Image 1 (tube, helix red, strand yellow):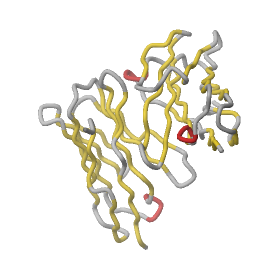
Image 2 (cartoon, one colour):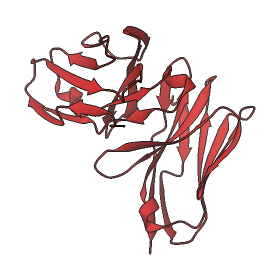
Image 3 (cartoon, one colour):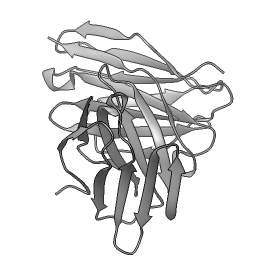
Image 4 (cartoon, rainbow over the protein chains, first blue to last red):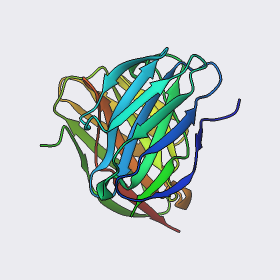
Length: 114
Length: 106
C-alpha cells in the first residue's frame, strides 16, 4: 500500500498570502488529521476529519481551515499568512477515528512565510 | 501549563544501554501514543496504548492510567535508535510532549 502523501513538500509564501496544502491518505483510510510543528511550540493538533466531517479541532485561529473530500483526500488552507505560520505541516491517516487506531504520518509540507 | 510532560529532554547513551523515556499527562485520555521522529521530519507511530504494556522488538511501552504516566523503554540501544521520541495523548484533542532527543553513540 502506498503511504500518506502530501503536496507540495516545500512552499515559500509571503505575509498576507494564502496557502492550500493537500494530503492523500492511505487507500481505505477515512480519518485524516493535521498537525503543525514548529521549533518553539513543538507538535500541535490542528483538526481531524472523518468521512468528510470535521470531528475535532485544536486551538488555532479561524485562518486555519480544512476539508475532506469523498475520496478521503484532505486539504488544509491558511489565509492571511503570518510569519509565525512558518512550520512543518503534517497530516496523518487512520482507518477509523484517530483515537481508536494507530495513525500513519505523511512526510510533511514545510512552509516558509517571508 | 503543559498537558503532557516528557523527561528527559535530551539523552545520550552508549550502544547497548537500556534506555527509559518518561511521559506524564494531566488530562483524561482515551489513548497514549509514542512517536519517533528522525531528522528530516518523518514521524512513525511506535505504539498506541490504552492500558498495560506493549512490546515490539527492542521497544517496550507501558502505561499506568491511575498515575497518568507512561514509559518507553529501549533495550540494547543502537545508533539507529537516535531520533526524537514524542509522547502524545488523546484527550478532548491531541496533546503532545516536547519530545526527547536521543543520541546513541557507537
